[in-house]
Amino acid sequence: MNLPEKVTIVEVGPRDGLQNEPGVVATEVKVGFIDRLARTGLSVVEATSFVHPTWVPQLADAAEVLAGIDPVDGVRYPVLVPNEHGLDRALEAGVGEVAVFGAASETFSERNLGRGIDASLQMFAPVVGRATAAGLRVRGYVSTVCGCPYQGEVPSDDVRRVTSALLELGCHEVSLGDTIGVGTPRQVQELVHAVAADVGVDRLAVHLHDTYGQGLANTLAAFEAGVTIADTSAGGLGGCPFAPGATGNLATEDLVYALHGSGVETGVDLEALVDTTAWMAEQLDRPPVSRVARAILAKRDAH
Ligand code: MG
Image (cartoon, rainbow, N blue to C red; front, side):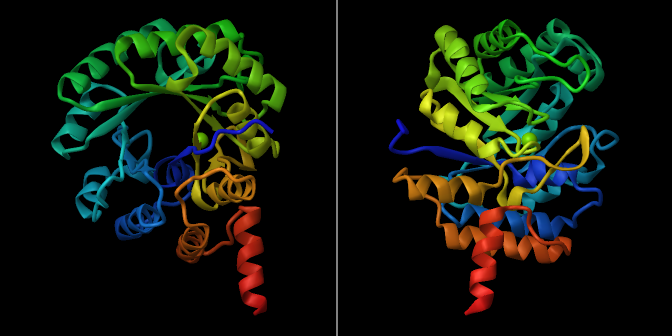
């Protein structure tokens, strides 16, 4: 396999994972989770979201979480901001990096952002503009890149258009998200090649869900296509909001295990990561969905 020597993992468990939890996790548990993750060698830990609490009550304590963490030098803690009001709150909290969240599917955009693709890009323009003017890095997310829960197929031209538009607004990188986890390896590779032909592969990341068990294969396929940044969630936290009971994000442990075994550097200490996942599983009172975490924990128990 033609894999990069080194990749960057963007840990999204505290945000993408916990926002899909049925219950609200206590602020001090979120803080403990983020602080533990940041000490495993991960260089990016997406901490929370400044989405209005009516939409995502699970992350209503975003400012308190950020105030509570004990930042590690060199670790980035981006937060999601949906609009200018969210950006105001994030700036007040003193964040160094934010992310905006768009969609490649017109229908998904209308249902989830309350506006179509073009209107959502217009909404992001002042957010990205003000954030970059304030010296922040801005990440763009494009969801539904391999399929949409409402309209089904999503043409790759739409993914290309939205990705280019976000980068033109001033995003430093765009993460391509398979929100419902329906993509397969060749599809992901072809999509990466198509988008990279417009914008270059260096500014692309992937966020590939494991709903159909394809998360790891798809992420490796993206790496073979030249991507070197992937989003994952410790323990595989985060369900799929469109498939009740299904798993969502690819587990960080599953990716780290595959990469280390293949000689690819991540900077992450797998044992420390599994310790963190085990700690979080105790807080949530259920075992992690990550196969690697389960295997390592079972092996430890056996000794
Ligand atoms: Mg996700």
